[in-house]
Amino acid sequence: MGRYDSPAALAALVQPHQVHRDIYTDPEVFQQEMKHLFANAWVFVGHESQTPNKGDYFSTHIGTQPVIQVRHSTGEIHVLLNRCPHKGTKIVIDRQGNTGKFFRCPYHAWSFKTDGCLLAIPLKKGYQNTGLEEADSGKGMRSVGDVKNYRGFIFARLAEEGMTFEEFFGESLTSLDNMVDRSPAGRLEVVGPPLRYMHHCNWKMLVENQTDTCHPMVAHESSAGTAVKLYEELGLPEGAPKPPAMEIIAPFMSPYEFFEGMGIRTWPNGHGHTGVNHSIHSDYSAIPGYFEALCESYGEEKAKAILDENRHNTVYFPNIMIKGPIQQLRVFIPLAADRTVVESYIYRLVDAPDELTARTAMYNRMINAPTSIVGHDDLEMYERAQEGLMVDGLEWVNIQRLIEEDEDFEVEAVENGTTERQMRNQFHAWVKFMTMGQTAGAAE
Image (cartoon, rainbow, N blue to C red; front, top):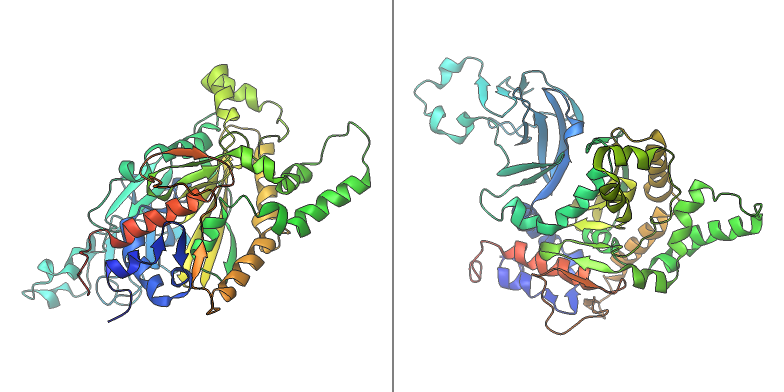
C-alpha cells in the first residue's frame, strides 16, 4: 500500500499557506493525479478547427490517457479512448489525419464507426455463442465520459459522473468568450501545429507561473531587460513607432507597481486570471480596419467593450492557459512527476485583418518557442526548482503572499495583482478533485 492511497493523505499535502514538496516530486502523487484529478476535472482536448471535415481526427492525451478527437458522419465531434477493445492496440499513432468513415485496428482489423460503435470483425462467426455482445469488448471503442463543445473548444471529463461543465467553469468562461468575440465572425481557427517544448519539471510549476507576477522583472531581465536596454541605446528618431517586437517584449520589464495594479481575479474550481484592470497586452498598436470590422459585426459599444478587456493570462484548471488579446492557448501535458510537454497554439480571428495573426505568431515565437529568448528564463527557474525541492532541509513550498484569514475559494474574488491567491485557489481545487468520490478511509 502506498503512502498516498488515501484521500486523507493527499489532502494533508496542502495547507492554507504552503504545500508539501511531494506534490511536485513524488511519482505516486503523480499517478494519483492521473487517476483522480484528470478524471474528475473537465480537461481541454482540442479545437473544432483541428477536425473540420467528417472523418478528420486529432490524437492527444487527457492526463496520460491517449484519446482521439474525431468528426463523426453526423458532423458531431466525439472523443474516444485511443485503444482497440480487443487486444488494447492503439488505433491511431499519427497526430492527425482523416480516417474516412471508420477506424480500423492495425492488429486484427476490427473496425469501428467514428462514434466508436463496433462496425465489423473478420471471421465474426468465431464469436457466435461466446457472449461477445454482452462483453465490454463487443461494445466498440470506449467514448470519454462526457464531452462539451464550447464555442469551438472541446473539453472532456473522463469520469462517467461528476461536476457538469457549467458548474466546473462558471463565470470563468468569460475569458474564452472574449477571445472568440474578438473575431468579427465570432469564430476562431487554429493556425498550424503548436510549438512543442519539453520541460524537465512538474506540470504544476508551469500552471502556477502563469499568474506569478513577481517574477517577470527578475527572471526575464536577461532577455527582455537586455532587449529594452539595446533598444534604448539604439536611439531611434523621436516619434518613430515602436517596433512590434518591442511592443511584445518590453512590458515584461514593467515594475512591481504595474503588476500590482493589474489585479488578479479568481473563480471557484481553480480558475483565475491576471490583468483585471490592464495587462502587458493593453498598449499594442491598433491594426487598421480591425475596429471597423468589429463595429460592423457588434456595434460600436460592444466592439469597444470587447477590446477594452485585456486579460493577461487566464488559467483554466488543471492545465491550460489562454491569452485572449493575443489569441493564444498553452496546454501543459504531464508525462511524469518531473517531465511536462508544453504545446503553444495560436488562433486566427476569422474575418479580421491578417496583421493580427502575424502579431500573434510573432509573440508565440518570441516568448514560447524552444528557440525563444524569454521561455528559457522560465524553463531554467522550473528546472532549478525541481532540483532544489530534493533538498531535505525544507519540505514545504510557501504560497502565502497576501494571504487573508479564512479565504473562501468557492466565491469569485478580485485582489492585488501580486497576490498568490490564485495558487492557493488551484491547490484548493487540487484537493477537491483528487479526493472527489473517495471515502476518507477507503485505503487506510
